[in-house]
Image (cartoon, rainbow, N blue to C red):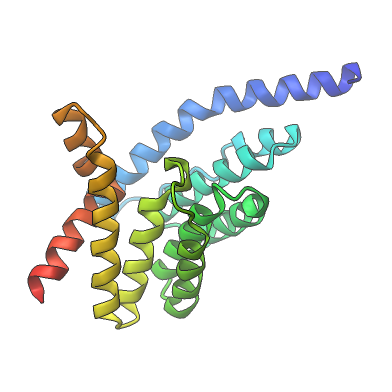
Length: 211
């Protein structure tokens, strides 16, 4: 590796390291902003963060795609759906050669499209995302989000019975995974403090009780 290449690689890594904590803080702030329903304030956006650019300069499609995916989720939670879609599409493209992360990227894009009212396209993407899951996938695949988004898309499309089946399956997968966590407090946090997991548990209860 030449000295200029080594310099740019080092600079990319340093930039990514510096930006990562801020992106996590921004994600938390965006989710709180959305949860509190503060519609009277300016839309919260962090898509100008440089983490994904740093990883792209370094040549890591995996990390660049993951960064874009998380930023898209932040923008979606903050209500900047146009920017979120651009980021989610870029993430899905970058992660097309990274099988463990591609299902979650597709689900993230599907969630954005669902928020934009593109139910048909969202449902097609969500089905594709679930089809790409493999037995024994590691948590990085975002299996909980993938199954949850499919259930939400099915519900939005008026396919309530299938949506209920999918969300119950998603809940069962989560409960099975949680059973391997020995500490009761950590097990409860896994099920109820992780937003996608908590929503899966809540919807499974709501949709089965309503039947």
